[in-house]
Amino acid sequence: QVQLVESGGGLVQPGSSLRLSCAASGSSVSRYDTAWFRQAPGKEREFVATVRRSGTGGRIYYADSVKGRFTISRDNAKNTVTLQMNSLKPEDSAVYYCAASSTMILSSIRMPSQYAYWGQGTQVTVSS
Image (cartoon, helix red, strand yellow):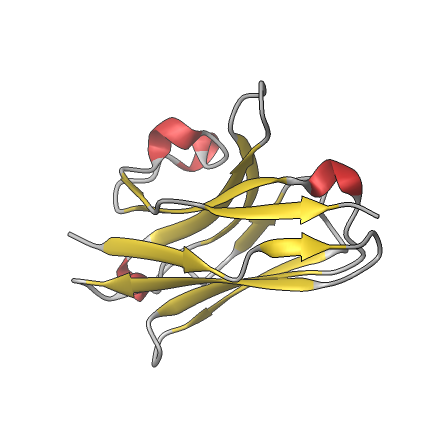
């Protein structure tokens, strides 16, 4: 099994950038479809981005709300998955979670239920 630990959250002003990191242990992150989700108070957990596991072409998926602003990437050597967030908006404020799946149903790749492994989350607050 893989264990996931997020880091890099914080308080930033609108228009700023932030880089989140998800460190994996116990298994190689390249064996999993690895995603970022976020959850704001009173709202459901929301898909942000996924990078598919090695052997599938490493295709990347983004939510429409972050496309063009956020970039997900995987570093197999460091066993990490990173979310680079640019042009941050107040509505991006949420707890951000890293998640991993070894049994993905591609049509449901944006659904939290597809991911069996989760980190504890890191808070991102975008405010002036």
